[in-house]
Amino acid sequence: MHFSYFCSMETKRQERINKLLLRDLGDIFQRELGLVTGHAMVTVTKVHITPDLTLAKVYLSLFATKDPDALMKKISEHTGEIRGKLGKRIRHQLRHVPELRFYRDDSLDYIDNIDNLLKNS
Image 1 (cartoon, helix red, strand yellow):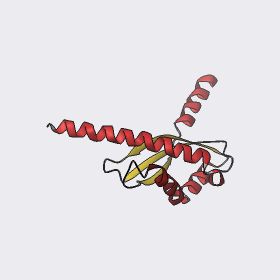
Image 2: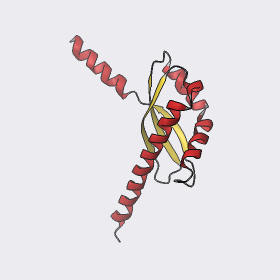
Image 3: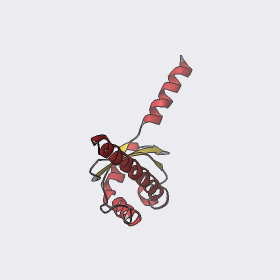
Image 4: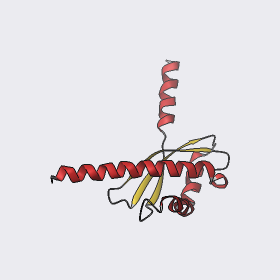
């Protein structure tokens, strides 16, 4: 077997796990974290898991919040709770629940800004 065969298998596995985490974390944010997110709408836009499957970088898009930084801080403070909820969902697919790190996905803000600049020029 060639080395490239092993690399592509790992990438496919990571992609599959990224999709699994994206779906389950999205559901957790929509259904189970109302006390954490308040009236804000939180959407999981991307998940990237490391090749060793120990860390998942989770990108969130935040809507209907006056203070996105405070909301991100509050979400980070509840990482253990979120990881616990995730563990209950994925326990049959993954042996270990990856550590979660949350990042703000501001790509939609960037697109809106460019759109406004184009409209005003």
